[in-house]
Length: 399
Image (cartoon, rainbow, N blue to C red; front, top):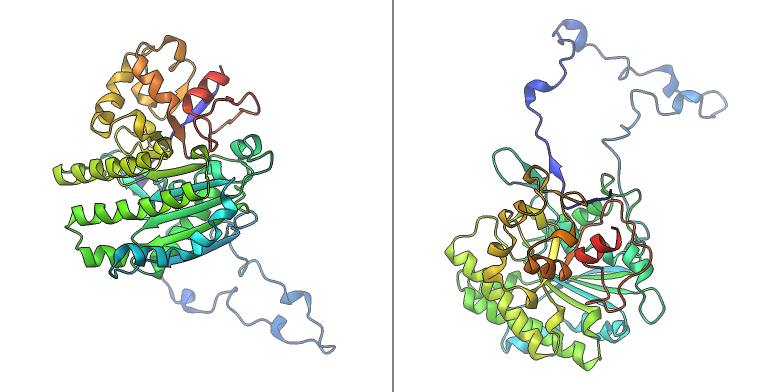
């Protein structure tokens, strides 16, 4: 039996459960310099001016193995650059001028992979789903999905013109300051080294990354003027889509993913989500990139928290009704207590009664690396995209 882990749960530990150590009593002796802090004879240079053995880091001064552990991406990115789009009229010309560093190198990726994420920046390390459960956010994988990385199974098996794929990675969001950007970069690094879900760090040495900051646009258009913001987003995607078409970029090698979702959306926010999704789909469809448009499945249900779905195959207005967990409760006595795992026992495609769910799984894709990922060959030749296999393919090929 294999297991497909969808998302990771954090178990809260009550404060009272911590092991009680010996009570430290305040006394005069604790005011004295401790053994670790005493100036020892070792600090003196020996007569021969040689560093004595004492100059080695003592046990007291040794850095903690865990607290000071730093992660570095294997190979690092080819480059990471920041672009700020200023609000200047005519706006389209201002956008093109700001995007010039990307548009200049775009022809170099005409036969490779181009991934654009919208609204994927790091905001918080975890979020509260309900009173009992908190979950680690997956923003690192929203910005850089595992399947973009050089040493992931998809990249080792799905090539571009018989050679390993290079990746142009573009993150579009509102970055308030330099600290906001650095937090997002750090979150990517931490995600690529999540030891709970992989044996080794992911290799990003094939990725050229750009962060596009649209804060100035948001400020000038007024954050409450949603129609103006959607109009700007439409212009931005239109410029990218036209450039892709000019450079003959294959639709299977181009992906625009919308991550603008609210945890508990009110009527206005829900309407904004739908408008953003429909606008991006309309622009890409007009430019013959209909199947390059994807939406994050979002927070409801958490079952598909680490998945994206092709927008053209499921309408946002119907998404939540179609994918609610109640649909899965009828499938082979699906246990809602383990909604974070798909197993052969609980989820067998051959026994699924709902044809709609089967169809959606064919257009649904994981953004986070899969535990026990065993697909090494037999990738579908008629793939929907050249980025990654679908959840349907993963389950079907491993049965």
